[in-house]
Image (cartoon, rainbow, N blue to C red; front, top):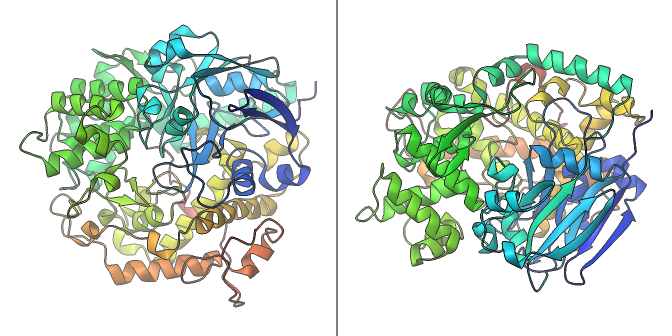
Length: 605
């Protein structure tokens, strides 16, 4: 049995309350695959520079890839939009049941392209290749778990934070267990008055050949370093790792180690867990934990930002704060940083270690129900009108808890991340932290670019970040050929660079340049404690590293892609007249693909 070929998108206009199916141009499918790549192509084509992320002209795409429903690991979907937090291109990914249901309900479509804004709350229902809109006024105000209970099928929805357009609101699925988290896709959904997308569909049937291929990759992943790591501790092990090497942001970035890390790390989670997600799979998912706010699945980023970041050493309290964010529909990393900022700047009423005060402030942020909550709902940068208090951001996105002073390659990864301060595009810390003195500028540049390009490919396929480790060698060539799509590894490596560069062109058109690829001054202050004590980011060394990155990318010293690079990547017919390009004709160094020697840059830890 042959597999359906994805060729279409379902365009939903919420202003007109219409739904239409349209064909994706063949060249777009070939050159951008799906997911991140296809989302970038649509956003660049359809958004004008300066489009209000919370206005009706912004797009919100919920996208699959050409292999969705077949790949090893947990199925995922991409939420692509212009970020209300950063003003940049935004792609965020979520696992769980929603992606499988979407793949089954739309076997010949890449997903949903949503535009406009309704004048009253709506639910979008997808089944049997079609989509319909219905009134959702009775769900407005409900949290993510309540919405999931109220609707049939698999649900992706917003909570109160999305309704109130908190700039880091999430799109939640599985009752809040999974989130398209960073950058505020949930706020865009709230501005469009789209409360939920409910999908009914079984994962697509696999041919015998595809099933055998998946079994082989599942076996390979089970034996892979990352597979063994995930089976043992999943992302919650991040707390222990970051503390061990001295890069665990503590008490609002005032330290690099947390004396009580063991109380909120992997052993504490194992002791409290009632089970695992996908417990019957060869490699299970996250740990399930009961809290007073309901069941939650703690992730490493939440434990770091809501635990060590807030000086809270009681695991039950940290899990409760995570569950609160899950149900409000709010990114745990940005939310934790926002509360930490308040604790640093207003310690007379808020203090580190006070979990109850943190919970109250999270509620106030989601509801915009106090002056402080309203200010922090727009992000730390928007709230910080006084002196720099040391809670860092890049492109207005609050940083995850890996402190780059302990691994300078992370400084480059944060600064050049396309959606703002993000650790998922590249994470050299996992090797550099153990080899600090041996790493050179060239090592850091090569590792960061290799990871960014590879993930641009794999996120265009919309691969599970973890199981996708088994596809880094050929970037998915074997899988694509299994469904009749002919690519070789070199072509896919170029595709990854093309996607990354198109996103850069989108951001450049929005006014971003070298000045935005910078780090907060706080990182020039030496680390006060822990294994990385005394280390700091040297500004001259960082600038040299950024120069090397731009040269390898084929961008100008201001971070603007050159015409030569645009031509080489087949983007000359894509770029519009509003996008600045650099005319420097000097040939760049090749940007490279995956550095196989530094492949252990594990996602999502």
